[in-house]
Image (cartoon, rainbow, N blue to C red; front, top):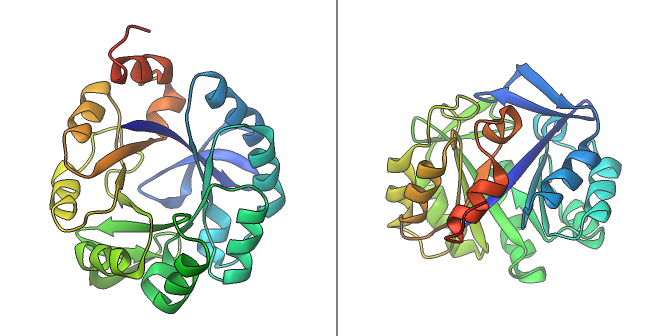
Length: 242
């Protein structure tokens, strides 16, 4: 079980949103590169980067900034947000990204997912964002009738290495994750699940770790507000004291 700090980029800055609303941003850093280095220095084993502007527009906006972040740290970085072509996937992987996250493309362009997983095995992750059990796309601005669990099974069949599951209504609320969602989908797929949305406390992370298939938790606002200490969480998961 690993804890993965999230760095969401909007307007070139590191921000957190509430339930994905683009007008609800709180800026936590003007320098996302320095923020990435800070999480690495605190023991992070992996980083989760999202181009929020790209997710909404459908085209990568902050490629140069994300490339600088990737090169500024030594730990693996997974990248998402507006990645909807094989060319862009190749660009990020060539820049040093450990994995690329496909969200809207996972729902709307399954042939791309299959082609990407064939060309880059173990490096394509499906990002599934759930709102009341349905899939949300385009930076969470549109809700599709397909169920998140159904898409999860399809993505496993398409060959993705892992799933990032986010409960939008929990995201940024500091109110705890949707344990039921992760249990439900964990019973239907065999690939690793990374849980996201509302993860706030160490007991919640430990509860997630007990769910079969859940191998990681993405944490954002709780780290930025100080509600959760990354070094203490990592030490506790190792059975140590920080």
